[in-house]
Image 1 (tube, one colour):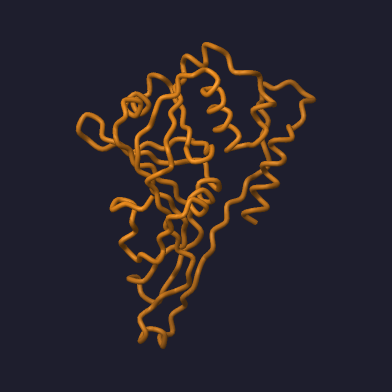
Image 2 (image 1 turned 45 degrees about the vertical axis):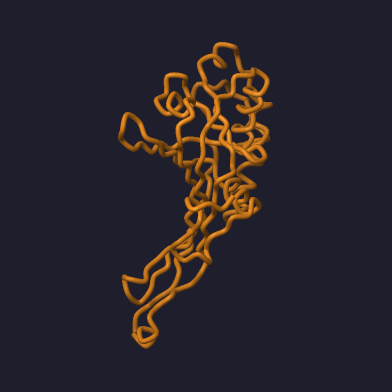
Length: 219
């Protein structure tokens, strides 16, 4: 939904408001930053998330300052960004970067229903490494009680994307100065087994598929 808060004002053509674009960026990442006001001062905290349809799930300790505050229904701002490269111009003024980002405004709602809570935890797990949830032991009641799950609707949100080359002043194109793009691609390395793990336990399918997918996308 486009509102005065979500409308991109600086270079409007880079703004996107359709759910497909917003979802696509959210699905590429799994770490967000959440901003809110705590006792009169601003706080921004990074956390993991999972998307399920038109809402996000986040979870944390019931003792967490962020979870306690957000569960009360206060306003929040959630951002997700993906850095794709440095853009080096012929002047420092026109240096830039290529990126994809999402800014979301709203309020979180605490999930208390047991089945939805388990579902939400699974969605976060699947969003990060699909299939890992089925490889680990089932979540226990004491873990459910110690962890809060919040649901955040993806309603008031926008995406902003820069995927362009160098934009210099016309007269600067004649200068003998190198200009161009330094692309940035993330790569994931081979998994390191826990030193306390018994011998003979193979790397599970979820990890292999995660590495293949991520390195394939980024490579």
